[in-house]
Length: 44
Image (cartoon, rainbow, N blue to C red; front, side, top):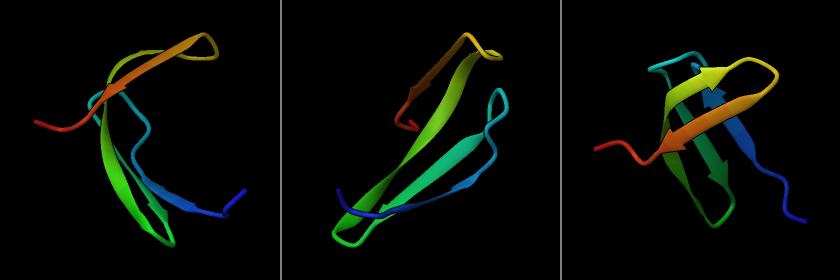
């Protein structure tokens, strides 16, 4: 397993940044039900 880092706003409409030694990606939180479900997508 490779260690990575994440940062950003995990709230509805927020953006999360996932970074790893070989790259990374950003995701947008589009649906949130705390402790039940999180839906995210690549930002458009």
